[in-house]
Length: 208
Ligand SMILES: Nc1nc2c(ncn2[C@@H]2O[C@H](COP(=O)(O)OP(=O)(O)OP(=O)(O)O)[C@@H](O)[C@H]2O)c(=O)[nH]1
Ligand SMILES: [Mg+2]
Image (cartoon, rainbow, N blue to C red; front, side):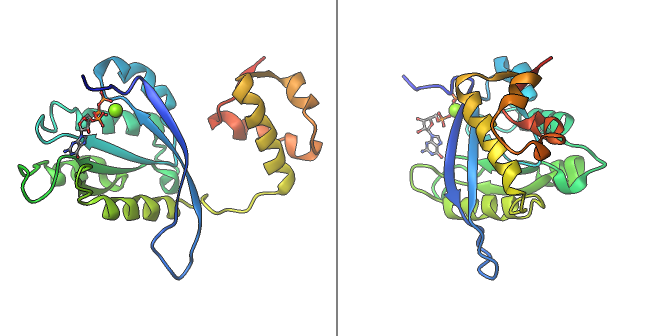
């Protein structure tokens, strides 16, 4: 029996660096594997954020329609795309699995998706996880797209980083925090004023 992705699986800290040797930059990836079954449609959307790199993975044996490629990309757009902030757009790589010279060719209407989703589509890939076909190119593309996100590699004040780290460590045990508890966290108070807005995408929830 095949194992199924149960909801979503965070796979943290796979490291990669973009292929641009001129400006080598180490990027830490936090990967989230969203199960593609219909039942997850409503809940997964709540977790779509931007800027992020998305992989819309489909199986040619089932076809793009049955794998709902278009629908998933639409959901990402609705949830994570703010037209007024194009640089922070989600970047979506459309990936066909079970690829390779001997496999049935994977047809997806690339132009139709580009017409519909424009810059959100970052590219099309064909891979095979068994033979490794296409995986290096895909990894390069992920690193390239991640490196192109303006906020990647941005410097932040140390006090802000310390506070975010403390907040994240705390959220591993308790994902909820009141404002009072937040104020009691040991750190530089100056960085706190802007933090509530900035933590909206982290795993901590505000209880007011
Ligand atoms: N040969 C080959 N097998 C693959 C490839 N991708 C996935 N498989 C196999 O297909 C099966 C299902 O793969 P998963 O990655 O679990 O597929 P999934 O769509 O994430 O499945 P759910 O998590 O149940 O939604 C596994 O046995 C994989 O080894 C591929 O590119 N080539
Ligand atoms: Mg899965």
